[in-house]
Image 1: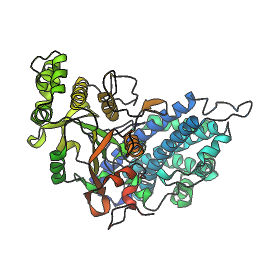
Image 2: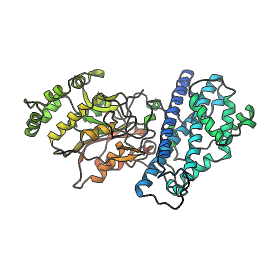
Image 3: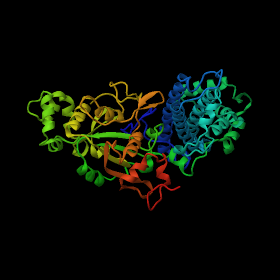
Image 4: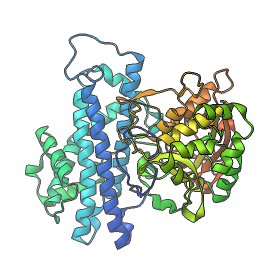
Length: 519
């Protein structure tokens, strides 16, 4: 299981093997196929949970998605329209991932083993049901205000969808072919070996769809149902850029235990970094990227080793005065950390895999943890940013980060509480400005009912402030992953400034020679 839970916004699971590749489940060997079926079914549950929570937000926001048709005309503010768009883009992100799963397991009827057919049918059916059930619910809510369709029909370039995406969505789920496919999958399932996995969500979604009156299952025999399943015309998927559907569903087994940033590059990175720097990171091929907005998906704070911190703070009178003001008469920063946080400090010294020393603190699935740079930067793209603040303020930021050590990961993605933290929240709260402390002012956003800041928005803010008196960060190093060349290259600040605009499928549109995205 992958250690990181990167970024923000509606990630509700920890499963690292994603899903579908460009081939079919039937091409896998027996052992690999069984493991893939189990992982993919768990991924369906994760995505369904994300959609369910997203729809819960929709139901709570009657000001955006009215429960009944408004009595008169209404005009959404720009902020409200942006919240509607964010909700829509997140929903579609989940649907594209579920599309990939359903497509990959769609040839279940070709398998010789009844148990194999049953397992892949379950993935196909669970993915289909989640999309159909919540698709009907979402359409019903949007149709209360026809003007919402105007907002939702805008192009969604982040996901490769053209103008008219809502009209396509509506046609897809208010379609006799979809209703017939539901009935057919239901009928076929009754002929296959039973299993309890995902049965609760399947039963719940089936019930909702039957209540909506869209099913025709009573008049479909099992034989007719199988004929329906075999006809690809009954499988409606979103039209996206060539190669994107494969990328959406490809598995981490595409590059097992191999990231684009190399160990040598990480070693060179370490020599350029200073305590207080922080990283934005991107990892391809993970379930955990689905539902997160934008290209950058994780953030981590570089604190260095005790030796590196001593060298960094040495000779700075302002730092020593600040340390003494905190009650440490020696002016030694390490003694201050050790006295205030004895248990976290001991953890920060404990060597980890391959004898590497911890140099990073980050919020991951296990909670706020000390990790090695070799582990944290083992990614596909990494950028290091350095705040433009005095060293005394860096010292305070590191002290603040130690305070959060061991706190659980915040699966609600809400910055309002300190009891649990998400990755960018650790960066935000370490550098949060206060009285006599300039810090770094990161712009919070309302993300589907939660106050947060995606890692990608930090990159966008850097771009907007660059070269102005408001600039708060400098770029130290950008290692830009190039999937087709199977490596990461050092890129300049101009390329980093454009990175936040990248679509999620950037890796499949890069030019082989230049590594840049092609039209």
